[in-house]
Length: 73
Image (cartoon, rainbow, N blue to C red):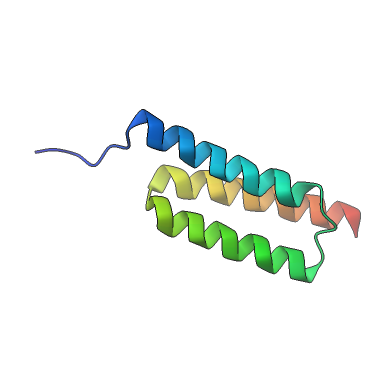
């Protein structure tokens, strides 16, 4: 039985995409509009990679962005 394991290149690309999401929003104002956009982009990445591992990383990134937004407000 073959398990659905992501190839290293796909994992690398997933990390890169999630890093770009974090970088884009961690330095922004993170008002309601930016938070909604970040959530939509995270959902798109979740659908793109369809990976439990990816979803856990996205959850951590979104929690961190939320902490950043609270500190700035």
